[in-house]
Amino acid sequence: MERGGVIYMLTNVNRTVLYIGVTSDLYTRLVEHREKRYANSFTSQYNSCLCVYYESFSTIEEAIDREKQLKKWNRAKKEILINKLNPQWNDLWEVVKEW
Image (cartoon, one colour):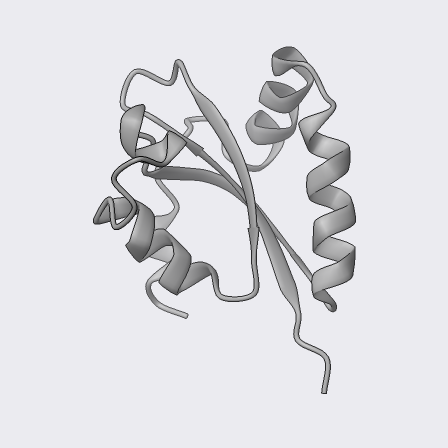
């Protein structure tokens, strides 16, 4: 059975950092980021735990392809994408934790 995938973008409180990740379990992955489970990771070092964007895919391979595409984009293009879904850059944790 194939597992779906999700790409997501995290930022910090000041909205100065953007991190793009991919996972098959967004809820668990966000918990890991929020708890700084990996102390030496980029998100822990830059306090990036606010989920401002995500996209779901039917396979993890599709999600990985999308992650690679987004990582090539400049910041302005990423901000446009976030603003379409989440113009206030609210933390989407409240939505994800209800999954």
